[in-house]
Length: 404
Image 1: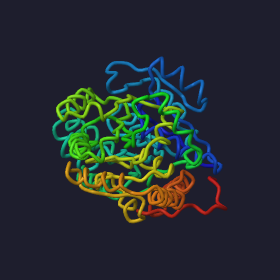
Image 2: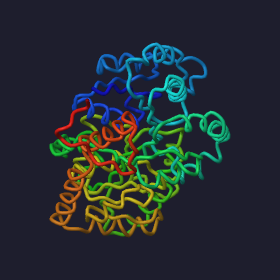
Image 3: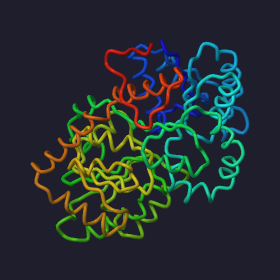
């Protein structure tokens, strides 16, 4: 039985993709017979929520500097309990729990896998890291030491591998895309629930953006594109829904863009949505879009594919299979290209949208479930533990194999 500990800086739901990935992979390996635990720094509020919901999550308080999620208690417990762990799987790059876990793994000889979650993807390095002196210094000093000490970097997309090499990492890499449990998205609520919650949606065609409000998501091009499109009379019934939490104050930038482009009556900002509210918005959407400059591998894209939604994404989403499968369109993140593509999707007949959505659902079930992702990761774990060569593209462990 493989004993794996996942280490995260935060496991609250608002932390988004990294939490979903850690849980998806961990729960998938546990379902195959592995023993999985999660260690995370947490605020008092997060502790109460997490411990009551997931007893296998061990939460630790934070000390100064809290922005680094510094948690001496987590590090201390990990040192004392490292003998009961076969392998550490650490997530993201810029936090004390990750740095401490990698250091403990190196000193104890415990194998360690690191998933950066897109933080070393080339666009982010060019546009965020190089402008952020603290992170630049961190990568040059502590980060390099951490990278040298891990046994494997887990890339979610092929594009990430180039970022790893630019960051100075020369060790093994395995590409294991994210997964999803498609079943909840095959049983969506009545779309009228969204109309009751947000009356401006009534009688409108809906384009849904469901992600954090942050610079790399391409909203600086999507909002001008929305003006170009909806200024045409045949699209004046369409509503763009921007659903997601504010990231570092970027919502103010988005609101200013909406006002400057004169589309306030055709854009709805909902803030963060979760649970039934989120599912009702997905159900209500006619089209889903994520016009990102840079993604790891978007869980929101997978969710909306599983829900059968026609899709508009950009090359920065790192998911060319969407267009190749006929499940949506992939265009450059420019206002003109986005406006034209949105028009094409909204002009489709209902039968065409249903057919496109079904192709997306088939794409997810063929290759992007958590079971498939966990079996691929289990192959990586076994190669590390047994001293075998770590494959770049691991095959899923056979269904007959358990996490033994």
